[in-house]
Image (tube, rainbow, N blue to C red; front, side):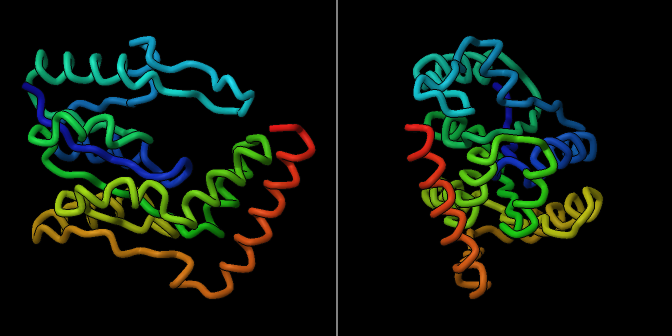
Length: 202
């Protein structure tokens, strides 16, 4: 059976680059979960018209379970949906890296990608409200939470390994409580997203 290391977080926090670097450092193979799910036919366009994709959970879980049961070795998995890999296969997960990024910095990163304004807003708001972090609360004893804001990939890998060495697990970052001024920004972003949805009938 395969052993898994999950790297997760909101879009733009650095999942792919950190996962690839970590896999090289640890001598593991790298898997981009989105590509894996697409090849399994478990992703489809969002029927609501949003600029995103919807996971067919049944097909995704079947494909993941089959992969883990039939493969050998260590795999670093970059995933936006960590519980797909955790729910039925927690015993095969060695640890989870939860990457965080300050919403102000994340806003700039996502805007530079040329995404639709609504997609940028949705993801910055999700990071501000700790959406993926909350998804992992039941697995907190496996989670190494790392702030990527202002750090390069080498620094991040070193921090992950240092936290792993002392098993420094837990989910502690709450952006809105750490930055009082952020509340005003996020409130404006939520209002802007609401206006966008009203205007486009989303």
